[in-house]
Image 1 (cartoon, rainbow, N blue to C red):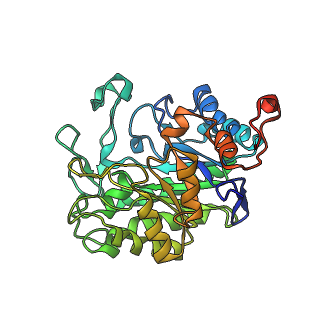
Image 2: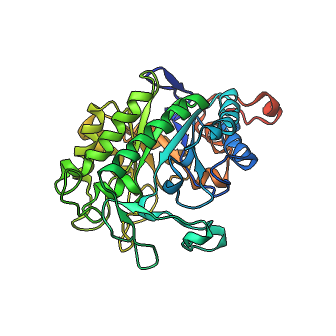
Image 3: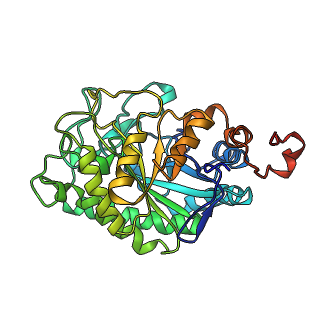
Amino acid sequence: MSLLFSELTIKEVTFRNRIAVSPMCMYSAKEGYANQWHLVHLGSRAVGGAGLVIFEATAVSPEGRISIGDLGIWDDDHIEDLQEIVTFIHEQGAVAGIQLAHAGRKGGFDIPFNGPKILDLKDGGWQTVAPSPLPFNDHTSKPKALDITGIKKIKDDFAAATKRAMAAGFKVIEIHAAHGYLLHEFLSPLSNIRNDEYGGNLENRCRLLLEIVEAVRTEWPSYYPLFVRISATDWVDEGWSIADSIYLSRQLKNAGVDLIDVSSGANVPNAKIPIEPLYQVPLAAAIKEKTGILTGAVGLITTPAEAESIIVEGKADMVMLARQLLRDPYFPLRAAAVLGADVKWPVQYERAAIHRG
């Protein structure tokens, strides 16, 4: 029996297997609105057999976007197009989730396909914000340090986005606190040099994320799962560390978070990351072992055997696939055949199903 293809129930949501589509920015929205690209992109991964399909980083405010092509959920008008995709995903037997995000100092970009460049205000750009006025690198704009009023707005924006996510029919919310975006910026001492209650010691630097979890939980039903994605380490001395992540994960568990989606890096440009297959899995395993919270593993997981081993060895509870699912939207169906699991193919594709043996 394949454990990768065993069901997982979190709260009142059951996932048909342990494979999740990791959030991947498509930079294809206009004014935040989802469109047919997103329907086909996300819908095909649900048809392909994933248990959970998480929408890309979806901005809780216009100034929370990475680029002008980001999905948005800052306006009630965004709900209808998102709902259409969510409905299709659920019809295919997968669960639809959404990653709520604020880019912080790493925002204000043009669409990457046009070349990585910061937009001027006159060209549709915006003033970025961060815990401290430190740019990401020499090629990005200097952010404005958030004051207490600005921090309150961030929390309110996440809460309002949660209500819209519920209206759109999502069954999982993931809060994006990784990859050098706003909430990660608050966590790391490399990007947070504040001297108020949101900076300084570890407890203070975790405060905003925990307050946002509380705000989201207020609007999110208790019977639906809440995930948080973190960068478990900055991969830089004196930066955010796995020990910090274990501390944070305990706090998040106590606050009602159900699963930690464990990634790493991307907060500073000079990090030396030991990229190799499964390089982030030990981080997920450490958090799971030390805190008892469910974890998701991500990062250069490309074969059925690798994905299966993560679950079998108890290193994580879900496997979050990104680029592998861009290369092969039907990876879960192929993996099931390789691992000898009986899975239901879409009836429209049954004539082509790969069967056991």
